[in-house]
Structure formats: C-alpha cells, structure tokens
Amino acid sequence: MGKYLIFLIIFTVFVTSDAFCLTYKKEELKYKDHLKDKMLYVLVTLDGSYRTDKWEEIIKLSEENINATVYISAVYFLNEEEKYRYICPFNAKISGISNVGFGSTKELTDERIGLVKKAQKQGVSIQSHLNGHFEGSSKWSNQMWDLEFKQYFLFTQFLEQKSQHIRFPYLEYNYDVYDVFEKYGIRSIVSTITQPYVDGIYTKISVMDDEKVRYFFYEFPISFVKYNKCKTIMMDYNFFVKDKKEQLPERQIMRNVEKLYLKQAKHCFKNNMPLFISHHFFMDGNEAYWKSLKNITVKLKKIYKNKIKFITIDELYNILSTSDSIMSEEKS
Image 1 (tube, rainbow, N blue to C red):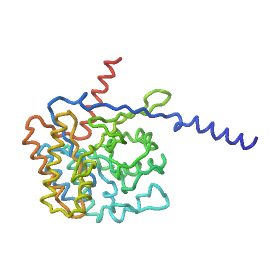
Image 2 (cartoon, rainbow, N blue to C red):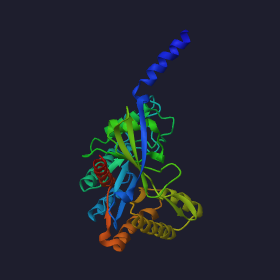
Image 3 (spheres, helix red, strand yellow):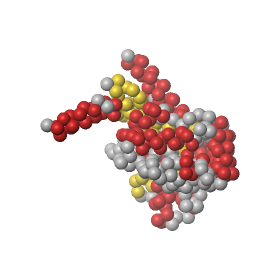
Image 4 (cartoon, rainbow, N blue to C red):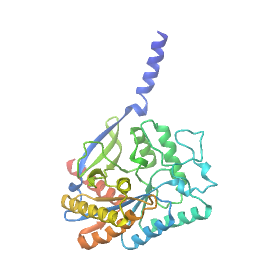
C-alpha cells in the first residue's frame, strides 16, 4: 500500500505539472501561399563568428544591400581570461570549455564585438548558434537548455536587438527546448525537417496549453540537393566533407558550388520558395566556399535583376507571421 501511495503521489504531481500539460501541434505550410509570385527571396546565412576579416566582408556585403543572417556562437565574445564564466550545460561543475574555443585576446574580442555591433546597425541579422557548440541530443533536459540560453543572452548583451532565431549546433535539439523558446522569445529554427522531406514546405509548431495556443514558432528546412552524385543538405560544410575526400582544387569546388546554387535558385524561383544559402565562417583553410558565396550573390543579382530580394531571417518570419495572422482573421 505504501509503495502504491508513493507512486500515486509522484504520478499526480507529474500529470499536473506544466511540462505534462503542454502539447505540440505541428502544421505543414507552403511558402508559395505567402510569398509573392515571380520573386526570388534569398537568405544568406552563416554559422560561426570568430574571424574579424569575415565580419568586415559581411559589412561590405550589407553596403551592397545584401544583409546576411549570422548565427553567432556567444563564447567568441568571451576572451581567454573570461572563459570560466561559461558553465558547461550538461555538467554545471565544469566551466571554461567549448568545442570551438573562445574569443582569444581581449583586444581581438573587443574588435569582434565592435564589428558585430556595426554589422547589426547596417541591417545584418545577428541570431543564435548558442555557445560552446555542443550537441543538444535527446539527453538534454529543459534545465540544460535553459542554462545554455540564459548564458547566450548574458554573453550577447551588447547587441542592440536581441536574437529571436536559432540554428542549433549540429542541427540537434529535442522537444524539451520548446517551452524554453517561449521564455527567451525564440521565433524560428533553421534546420532540417525529419523524413519524409517535402520540398517547399515549412513547419509551424504551436505550444498548446489546455487546447489553447500559448506560443508558436516556425521551423525552416535546409533543402536536400544532389552534390557530387550524393544527396545532402545544402550547406557548405557538407560539400566540404565530400570535396575533401576527392581532394578537388579550389577552382573546381567553386564551379560545382556555384552551379548548384544557380540550379537551386531557378528551382526556388519557379516554385515560389526562398533560397537559403548556408555557409560557415571558416573551414580548414579552404576559402573556395566563401568565394563562391560572394560570387553567387553577384551572379544572382545580374540574372534576376528586379525580381530578386535578399532578406534576413527576421524579414522572412515577419512576412510569414503577418500573412499567417491575416489568414486566421479571414477564417474567423
């Protein structure tokens, strides 16, 4: 009887807790229902944020009306002396470790912060790649996610506009992060969609409480493409892994990448869906992918002229959420 009573008490607490009451409603929506016809929307997105020379190039792109979305790792804004401020999310007894290092010297860290602030003022969207680039697997609890997000916003207090969008390290996360989104105001994820992947679709996820929508956010997929006879997500790191095995020269890599982006742009224009160009700041000394990124923006502008619009993830979210609210009003 005693064991049964303990079980009943534990079960009652569990079912009446907020975590148990929350449910998640997923809706697959079509980009073409919300985006203008005969217009190519291009989102240049980057992960990383360490190298100051890349920040200078991002600022130059923004001067050409190409505002990128940069998913920053917040540990790059802690110098070596400050790194022990960062607590490991899956072991609170450990501090000062990160899969991607830290911000180096105080001078370099201060310079990086200055460049990020300048980029943001010019219209570059600064969003979250969290902190230490750890893999947020199924083992991560709500408390672990909360610690990681709390630290991200603590280390990025210098930003004039808080980050509202995220790309997870390794594209890994679980449902325990969803109500943490509400606490920190996260409005979208840019990541893959679980199989089966459907082209031209994004997902609206509503956090439900007592059958009422408490919060919602969007998940935007990264397209699957054929690259070097293999199917992969359209991100330069994935191309890099395949190219490294074949030891392709820089010129050939650039031809392959730019050809793929032009083909995908044509597909996106035809099917009225945005083109996500997803890059990293730096990969093993290979600059081919970065050069391809800059080249393709010039080529796309020449091809599509007044039928192309470079937008940030904030702008895409605003377009979709505004049209989404209009549709809701029409239905009601």
